[in-house]
Image (cartoon, rainbow, N blue to C red; front, side, top):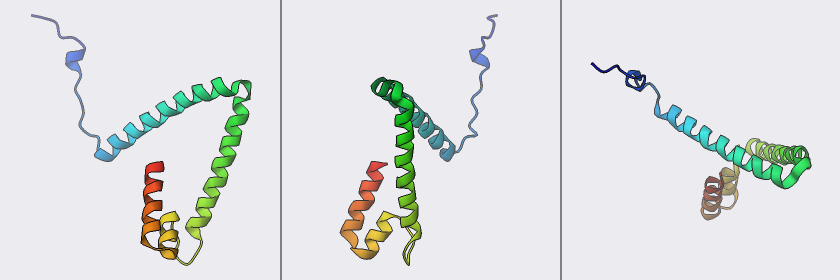
Length: 104
């Protein structure tokens, strides 16, 4: 009788929900993209790579603070879509919503 290998003993678990599978897949894709871009950034910036990361963090911080202010200001809090819908109407809000969706 043949001896069972290690691969024959592996049992797959089906305990992951759809949300867990999607978030793990997105995490893998984001981390892969970060490592690829990190290599390109270090190759381009050379010894100034840490400074470039600090400048990028500063830009992200300013952008985040702007979105926080936008989300919490006005009579109706919300993002760029809600603000555009309230001030200019449907088409501009539709366009902004899709630009934000595709841009992420």
